[in-house]
Amino acid sequence: MKTIFHKKIVWVLLILLTVACEDWEWDNPHDENNTLDKDEWAPSELKLVSTNSIDYVTLQWKSSNMNYSGYVIEKKEIGKDWKEIYTEDQHNEYTDEDEVDLRTTGYTYRVRAMASGNYSGSSNELTIEMPEIEIDGFGYHEDSGPYCLLRIVKTGSSDVRKAGIIYALVDHINSDQNEPQEIDDFLIRHWNDDENIFRIYDEEVEDDKPIINLKDLDQGHYHILPFAKNEEGYGYGERKTLTRK
Image (cartoon, rainbow, N blue to C red; front, side, top):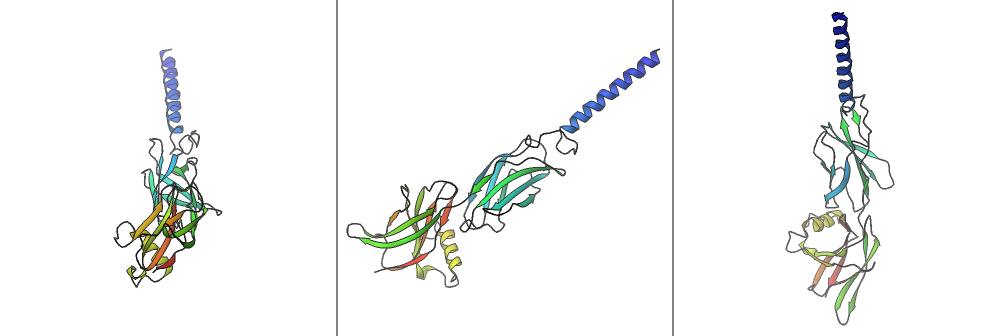
C-alpha cells in the first residue's frame, strides 16, 4: 500500500515539475514554444539620438531586461520597401552608416528584438525627414543693406525651428574639392571648427520665407549654402555663389 502511495506522490511531483519547467520555458523568448505575446517583449520608445544629415543616423530605444541575441533594425526610404539590418550587439543603440544621406531623402526606422531565431514585435516607427530649403534670391535694402531671401519648400517630419546660410570665400575651399558635393560636404562638416566658415541664421522662423541679413559680409566671392533645422536635424539646399562688391 505504501509503495503505491509513494509511486503516486512521485508521479504527482514529476508532473508538477514538468509543468513548472514548461511554464518557465514558455516565458523564455529563446524557446521556440514560448507563449509570450510578440508585442510583450518588443523594443519601445525608438528615437533619434543624432545625425549630421550626410552619412550617419544614431538611434536609441528601450527594451525589457531579457537576454536577447541582438536586434533587427528595419529601415526604408520614404516611398520604398523595408530593408533589414541585423546586429548582434545587445546595446540599445545603433548607428546606421549604410548609404545614409538625409539631404536627398527621408527614412523610417523600426526595431525588433532577436532571441535564438525568435523575433519580437516591432517598436514604434520613427520617421526622419529633413526640411527642404532653397535660396529664392539676393537683394539690397536701403536701410539694412544686402540680404538673402530663403524659401522653405518642405518642413520635413517636424516644424522648422531655424533657417540660415553657411558661407565661406570661394578661395578658402581646397582646390581638390571641386565637385559640388565635395564643396557642400566640406562646408557642412567644418562650419563649427573652421574660423573661415561662418553661419548666419534666424532663430525664430515665423513663415516659409526667412530673410537673412548679409551686412557683415566683406567684399569677395562667396559660397552660400542654405539650411533649415527641424527637431530631427538640418536640411540643406542648393548652394549658390555671391559676389559682394
